[in-house]
Picture (tube, rainbow, N blue to C red):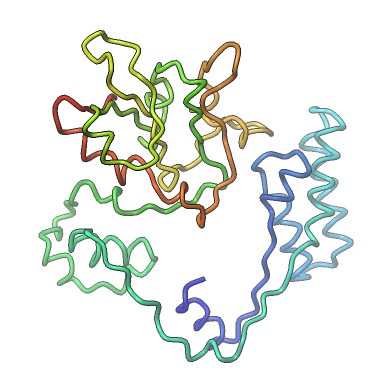
Length: 286
C-alpha cells in the first residue's frame, strides 16, 4: 500500500475493512463473481439496515434471480451471502499520518505520460492546470498515442501462463486477445542469446523460418481478464478458451493466480521482447 494512502487514512481517521472476495468466490465455485460477497460485507459493516433483514432480503433476491438455474446455483449465492462476514478491519497506525511519499521510481516514460497520463490514472486529473495540457498541445482534445504501454496496471486476479510443450504455434490466443496482452515472437539465435531463461520452440513453419525460435509472451500486467460471462470465467478467458493445445497433452495456455511479487509476473512481452520486432530476420508475429 503506498505511503500516501496510509497517510490519508491516518490523517482523516478512516476506518478500513478488507475481504478476500476473490478467494471466497473461488472456494464457493462462483468463479470470479464477487459482487454478492461484497454486497453482504457492505450491509454487515455499515448496518444501514439490520443485518438479519439484509441477509433475508439478499437470499430472497438470489432465489428469485437464480431459482430457474437450479438449486446448486442458488446455494452458491447463499454461501456468498453467508461468507460476506469474513472481512477484517485494517489497523491504521497513528504514525502513518507522518509518512513521507514513496520514492519515485524513474523509468523511460515520456514527459506526457509522467505529467498528464499518470495523474489522470491516479484520479487526480482535476488537479492538473490548463498549462499542463497546453505544454503538450492537447488543449484541443487531441491525445498522444501509445500511452497504454506505460500503464502496466496488473488488475486481473487470474492471468495466462504459456506451456510451450503443448503449443502448436497457431497464434489464435494472440488474435483473440482484445488488449494485445499476448504476443508471439520469432527470434534468431543471436536474438535469443540476449534473453536469459527464455523458453522457446523451434519454428514449425514457414520453411524460411526453420531453425528460428518461437515464443508466446503474455504480458500479465496488461491482462484485463476478458473471460466469458459464466460461473467459471476465471478458468476460461478468451485466450485459454480458444487455445486448441495439444490433443494429447492439453492446452498451452492456462489461467493462474496473479502474484505481483513473482519474478515471472513482472516480465512481459511488451517489456522485454518488442525490441526484436523491428529487426530482421527476427520478427513479431501478429
